[in-house]
Length: 327
Image (cartoon, rainbow, N blue to C red; front, side, top):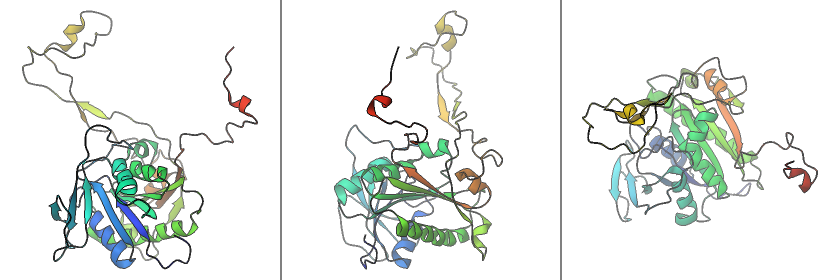
C-alpha cells in the first residue's frame, strides 16, 4: 500500500495454533483489536487443528479440505459450515479453516483464495515464544511467515512468550496494543522494493506490560541454540510376542540383533527438553532469547534466503572463484 493511501490495510491473519480455544487464546482478541481499533481489512485462514512444531512443511499428498468458520465476539467460538453463508447475530466475521499446515494455509490464502488482495501477512500471535534457532526453525508460526514472504508479500511472525505458567488475561490488551504499534512502525519503514525481509516479534507475557513506562523493544539477532532430547521412550506393556519387527537394530558389540527387540516395541513420544532453550544465562546479549529473559521485546529481521551466509564471509570476484576445485 502506497504511503499516504487512505485505503484500508488488507491483512491476512494465520497461525499454527488453530481456532480460538485454550491452545489458541490470543487469536480472537487480536482479530478484534485489528478490525475494531485499527480498522484493518482482515482475512483469516488458519489450520483447523493445532499445528505447532511443523515448521514450513507443505501438504503434498491427498486433498486439503476446508470449511468456513463464524466466530462470535464473546470468546471466538463459532459455527462451522461447509458452505458460505451470511453472518448471524453476534458473529464478527467469516474465517477459513483448512486441514493443512500453516505454510500451506498461507500459500493457499495468497495464491488461491485472495490472489493480489493482501498487503501484509501476520502469523500469530503464537501461544509461546519463537526465539533461538532451534525454536525458530521448528515453528509453524515462522513457517507460515516464510511461506508468505516467498510469495512476495510482506510478512511478520508474532509470538507471545509464556514466561510463567499462568498468563493473566489483563496482559492481553497491552500486548495487542504494543504489537500493533511495533507492526505499524515496521510497515512505515519497510522497503517498498524488498519483500524478502520478514520480521519475527517476540513479546514476553509478563507484569512489565502493565507498567506506565512500557516495555523495552530491541532489534535482535537469532540465538544460535541447539536441540537437546526431543523425545522420550514410551513404555510398552502389551504382549507383542507375535509381532514381527519392521526394523532390526543390532546390539552394540554384536550378538543376535533380534535379542535387542525381544518383548519390546520401539515407541517414542514428543517431549522436548527445554532446559537449555529456557536458560536465563545462556543467550548472548543482543539475541532474541536474551531480550525475552530481560522482559523486553525482541524484533528480529530475517531473509527468505536465510541459509545463505553473508557475502562478507565469502567474497567472490568472479564466477570462477565460486566454483569448487578438487585436486
